[in-house]
Image (cartoon, rainbow, N blue to C red; front, side):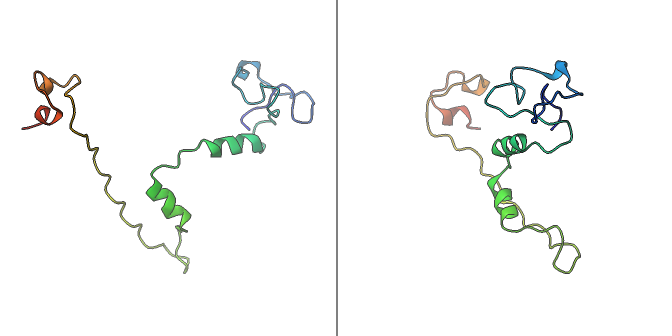
Length: 117
C-alpha cells in the first residue's frame, strides 16, 4: 500500500491517514472495496488490480518470458543472448478515399495518389 484509508482493514483508525490523499477514486473509498493498510504493507486488492490492468508490452516479449527466459545460465554465469525481436510490419492501408491534413493529398482522389513520389 502507498497509504492507508482513514480506517484500517481491522477497523482501527489509521494514525498516518492523510486527508489530502483521499478522493472519490482512491481504493477503499467505496463501500464495496477493502480498506487500505498502512503504507509499505502488502495490499492484496491493489496488487491484483495492478496485475489485471498491466500492459506487459509486445506479445513477443511476454511469450519469451513465459517460456522460461532466465537472467542467469544454468552454470550460474550469464545466460545466452536474447533472440532478436522480429520486425514490426508497418501499417497497411487499404485503397480508399484520400483524406487528412497531409498537403500531398490536396486535389488527389485516392490514398495511393497522395503518397506517390
